[in-house]
Length: 384
Image: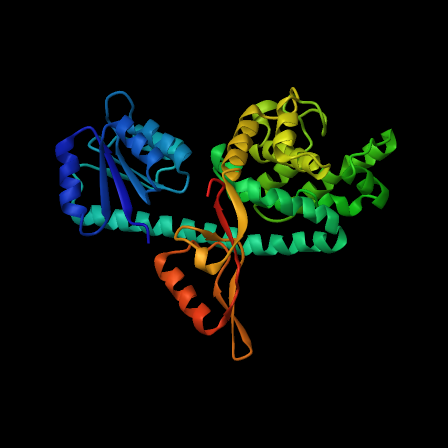
């Protein structure tokens, strides 16, 4: 369980006291002043709790904890001050969503109790998120599989863009990448209401008549409405609704947000769906990316730059067949490795496993006595 607690104060002696008195109960970290504190929140793994002094030069604790809320929404925030001011307490609670407002000097036992409650609150928040992201994602995956049965060619598009979604979301600073992944999974659900002829024209990149275009525009709205019926999927539904909206405000639906006001998920979908359409038409990935870059106004420049970075990283690796005797440490399995023993087929190592010296020795031993996958499909740097 995450028990990391960050104390932000401009008095180094107070911070030293916190570290000395609380280190046996929590993973205590300290920062002298608001700037150093926010830098630690931004650059380090999430803290369960951030405790800030109210009165500090340059930025008060209210502003600090409000900024912490922006950077790490799940981190529990506690205010600690020597001034028991009602107005300050009200402002802290309203502006920073403070979990506790404590006054100095704070008796160690009481502080430990308050921080224990804060850590438990963080655990509950993260447990709820895990439930939401895990259980809900499984349910949504079932919906996407319905699409795969009804429109397998359309499901193929969603499956092809999926590997790019999380890397793009991460590079673009998406605070909830799982929501963007869900949006990508379900963005084409509306195709189930489109006539076969319209879907065929779209998939082949053919020009749509005015009537067909009007019908086609319904798909994003239908998918968004379906998803909006699921609790807490409002943001996902909005990303799906604006997937055909251009960065400059053209496209559909008409009106509404433009530019950076569009949901980040929608801006990512806009790029990836067109990228897939171009590669599906026969263009190499580099050429498809170049075509997107040459188009003015349709795409978020930051998302395009992120796609270029992802493609560049992708281009550094290739998938090859490798004889077992040539496998080396650090190679990543592109397919499962199986062994046949006594007529039974058993998995030895899973796809995605990075080979180590121990794994290589185990594979070599199995190869001497059993029938094992050989050659093995692995991912290696392109210069190997």
